[in-house]
Length: 470
Image (cartoon, rainbow, N blue to C red; front, side, top):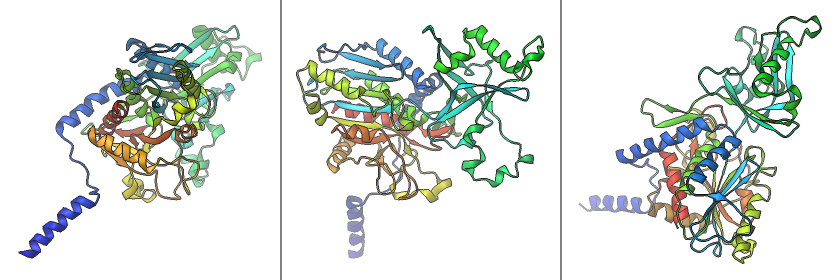
């Protein structure tokens, strides 16, 4: 009889002291809410394929939700809602709190750029009867993944007179697509002896865009007739010349729609879920915030995939200038406001993949359906080139999420010395702000088609709303 009591006591002790590691039980009601939430997310993903499109989309929703363009020098009242559009490629949204900025602000930061193929300044060329665009890949990609898939063209061309034309080709039914060709396996013996990194080289990522020569034939144009026909079509539709490519931001992205994955439809597959799967809940939570205690600031940043450099990335001054304007309007010091601020760096986590388990450490990984993923630090090989959240800040978030029924998990991006990654967190930490990485775990990150859990998406929204409320 005593043995039975001892066993019961040990079981209670285990439940009290040890982390269970078991998958949480998710109610049918919660799954249904996750499925419903994901419908809006998929519509967003099918509309927004580039950073410019993300800003247009967010500004449109923000203005409908009562946000107005920010006016530096103006003192705003609690509940006021403002936005600052940074060059059409990054965006700041703020809802003024009851305490204003005096005790710091609550910042969420997500990025709206993703890996892609950009056009070179002089992209158009013809070779052996085919017309191509030369590209320069953007961000960390596996180059071989970008061959033999349909791509769409997005962006803006600005003519020398300053007039601009926005272009989107390949997203609607009946529109043409583009692609990078690959070598047939019958002739690929040499190619297949190369490493995966070298199998497709950057200068081979040429997009085929035409094969029909201009008519009538003109002998002096031999070798340029297809190229000329492509430019003729572009000129007729957009009023541009080849020289206009030098003042253009043109991106080619996968022409895949966002779709449900699995017989149970529990996941979403789409291009650019890093990091738009975090952008969407940050945007929705911010738009639905009324009058918080502390002012909330949402940052939708550009250029994270290449180190956050440039005047639309977070390794610049556009966020600090905005905070300074808010602080000065209230008669406060910007550095004091920042020192009292906290931030969620809303970026994706690497989801544990059983097919590649050798690069993950199971007890310190994030899993699909485990909830929003938290990473105390990112970096790699000795925690290099990253910030690390304090124990106090992590404890605060633990309590906050549990009180608000947010399913969460803590992990790292793979095994020690297996690689590493970075986010915008280190740039925000450099402002003397408490910051931690938090986001949706992703399978096949940086591939043209990535996979996430609908449940984790919903929990990220809940996490951001809880952060804004506290």
